[in-house]
Image 1 (cartoon, one colour):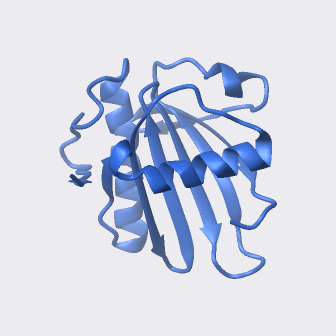
Image 2: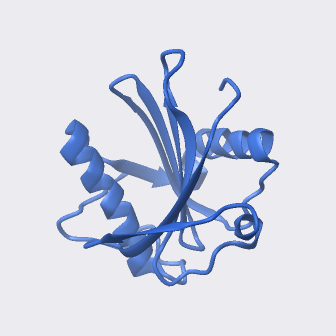
Length: 154
């Protein structure tokens, strides 16, 4: 069942098993606010088992581009296209959020972004491979983020 993410009243619905449910919910709400403000889009997520195709797509890109396998269990996922950009999001039990930005037009931006919820450790599979910058968020506290550019075609 889909869940519309509300950034006015942050809820941990769907994220209760995370050790950092409040900050992961804040991170999810932060993303919802961004898409609402920039594109007028309502950010909706589904349980990962109902969005297996999205999770598999993100995991395929991670494996093929960087030989990465995320150890944490995916909790929620979503995919949509807006302004010629395909987006995919997976929110993990550990507090990690991964997004794939893939511009449909040739030569556009294509990248994978990692965001860490406030209070979580950097996952072992990412720790030695990425440096994380910090940004403040009213909804999510301190978000640590990193990314890499996608070279292949997906």
